[in-house]
View 1 (cartoon, rainbow, N blue to C red):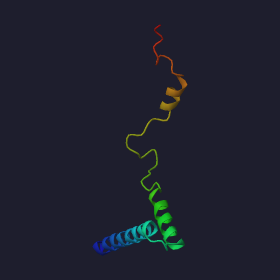
View 2 (tube, rainbow, N blue to C red):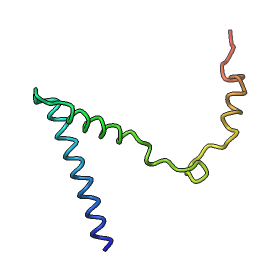
View 3 (cartoon, rainbow, N blue to C red):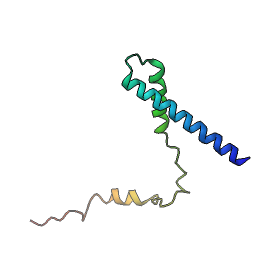
View 4 (cartoon, rainbow, N blue to C red):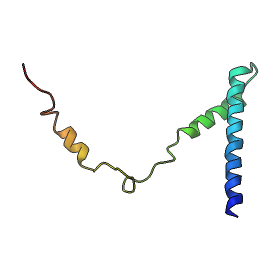
Length: 85
């Protein structure tokens, strides 16, 4: 049963992707494109910028420690620039 669900999800993604490309191409090429195509194109673009791969900071790999940025910013840049005249 897992195979059927996986192919169903892939089919839905491919179908929605094809619908989005149709809307974008119609907006670019057809002079009679209207609100429907613009809505589909804008909705698809909006979904593409959602941060769907975010994880809580505690579970992220390579996470920066909580106090690290405070130490760096609190130093005020001392010792970073050479003051040779």
